[in-house]
Length: 314
Image 1 (cartoon, helix red, strand yellow):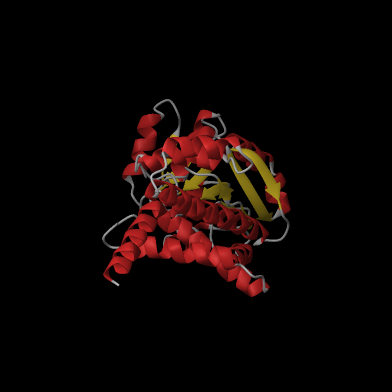
Image 2 (tube, rainbow, N blue to C red):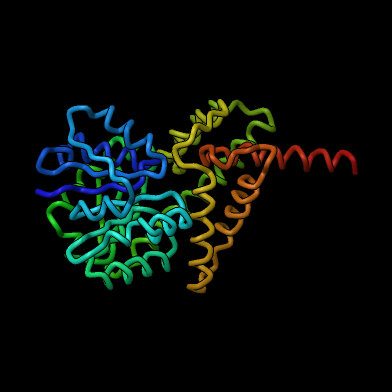
């Protein structure tokens, strides 16, 4: 066995790395987990949570790759991903013959294609594996991996064991960027659902309907959804503790709109949702960009009050 690397211990990465440790895929004397994060305190916090596991903290992303045969990476944005990947002591700098990178972030199609080309040029192998799921599923091993790129990496025994430890399902879509396309389809649908759900709850509250009763009604019909059941009660309480930050939801919607435009597909509903999330993200008064994407409800309420005020004045 050999060390497994993990780059990025944010909202998603922390849970994923924890699953590799708790399920025995990494963290042993023969296969330590080598980690690096831009905020190093998160690496040491992980070590404290698993005192009986072999966890080594790399000095850089480059060092993690150099010390590991297979490295998983998940960064929050395309900008952060590129900075870590192409930096002087970044991920790419550590790649050599036989090294493998599995990138689990949600990026643009062009990002995945570029990374594959750069890694292959140095003798390494690349698998894109963006995940469907948020903070809770990452800690519970319930993620869905949407993979593409090197099929030999996908079939590798260690990679298969790792994906099984971190997720409940995995799919292989073929050439690189197909996994990203699948992820953007999924997340654009989720974003439009949340936008519509937020508007419906705002309308129900504005006309005086009982929110809890409306959630019960929604849960009893054909439109019932695990997301509605999970998010609804929190939204009524204005609890938007981040599981999937609103700014990341907007990023995915924008990438999906761009993909649809390139494909020549009418995506009007998603375009409207993207604009709604953009407005919420950029609202300096609400400051909800880093809150859960359910906080789009607050922007809807604010916009509704503004429109009502303008109508009264006119």
